[in-house]
Length: 118
Picture 1 (cartoon, rainbow, N blue to C red):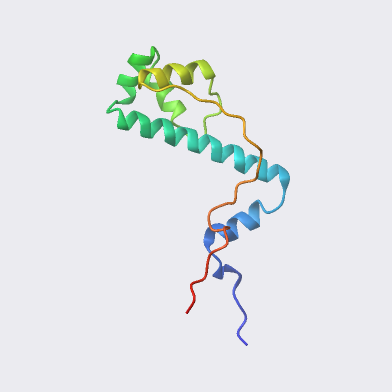
Picture 2 (cartoon, rainbow, N blue to C red):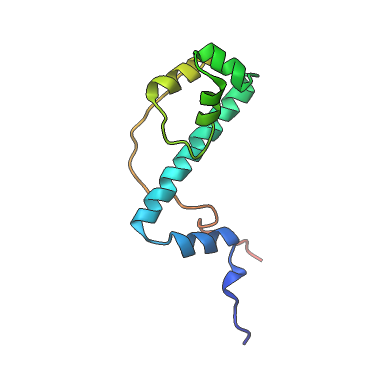
């Protein structure tokens, strides 16, 4: 019987298992990075949907284009609630905060895939 190669799994699954796995510190870092990336993407998408450039949004929010650029960066960690509220208001939005039960996210590719009956 041929030996299965360890990289036959999806690349993300392999990478997640190899570098994060069940290590709670690494999982916490992954969760934090994922949250920052989601916030950055959300702000970018709302700005684009509003038809605003970073400069135009900055002018409306009373800040600079470099600040808008920074908050749209997934690596940025210095978000303040007051700035997010100003940015949201400049786009005709409001910030909503919820507290939800903490559950680890299932990374893409980790969800059990349904097999179709053949």
